[in-house]
Amino acid sequence: MKKILFKGAGSAVPTPFTDDSVNLKKFKKFLQFQIDNDIDALIVCGTTGESATMTKEEKIDAIKCAVEIAHKNGTSTRKIPVIAGTGSNNTKEAIEMSKVAESLGVDGVLVVTPYYNKTTQEGLIAHYKVIAESINIPIILYNVPSRTGMNIEPETCLELSKIDNIVAIKEASGNISQVAEIAHLCGDNLHIYSGNDDQAIPICSLGGLGVISVLSNIKPKFTHDMVWNFLNGDVETAKNMQLESIPLINDLFAKVNPIPVKQAMNFMGFNVGKCRLPLCDMDS
Image 1 (tube, rainbow, N blue to C red):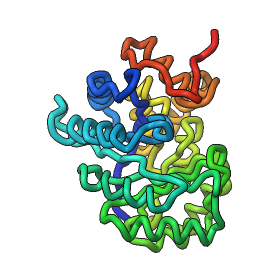
Image 2: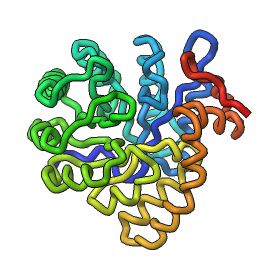
Image 3: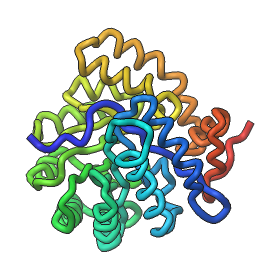
C-alpha cells in the first residue's frame, strides 16, 4: 500500500493578497482557523489559491507560512499535512517548483496535468515520471479536465501508480464511472481524493480517502465530520450531510472558483481581499 498523506477533508485554501504581495497576516489567521476546526490537511498554491497568478517568490512565502503554522508554531498540538500545488504545463518549471516545495518542508505536492499545450497519455506518463524522479516526497496527481482540457485515463493512472512516490489522485473529472475504473485498476497503489465537494461521499463509497475541498474553507469542521462519519461507518449521517451541503456547494461555484469562496470569506470577516485579474468581483 502506498503512503497515505491524509484521510478526511483537506482544504484547498485561497491566498489572501495585498495590492502587490501575499497578505501573510491574514493567511496565518485563516490557516489557524482551519486547524482549530479539525481540518485534516492544507493544500496551498493550488487552483483555489490562484497559483496561476502568483510569482515564484509569492508561492515560496505562502508555502513557508503554511508549513510554519501547520508543523511548528500553530496553537494546535496536531501536525497537519501541508501539500503544495507545484504543477505546470512546463515540465521543467514543475520540477523546479516541486524541488523548492520539498526543500521548504511540505509533506507532498499536488501536480495538475499540463494545460493549454496538453499532451498525449504517453506524454503524461513521461511528464509525471520525470517530476517524480526529481523529488523524494509523495505526489498527488490532479485531474481536472474542465480547466486543463486534459484527462488522465484510468489505464494511465495504472501506469503512474507503479511509480513509488506517486501515491494518490485528486479526481475532479466529475465522472464517477472513471473513478470506479481507477479504483478497480489501481487498488491501494493509488489513493483517491474527490476534487468535487458534491462527490465527496460518492467517491468515498468507491474507496476514496476523502476530499480536497473548497467547501471546507467555509465549513471546515462540517466537511471533516461528513467524511469521517462515512469512514467510521456512519453512512446514513454522511449521506445526509452530503445532501445538506449541496445548496452551499452550488453557491460556492456560482462563479469561477475561487471568486465566490473569497467573497464568502470576506463576509465571514477574514478580509482576504479580491481575486487577481483575470478573475473579477462577484456581481450582485
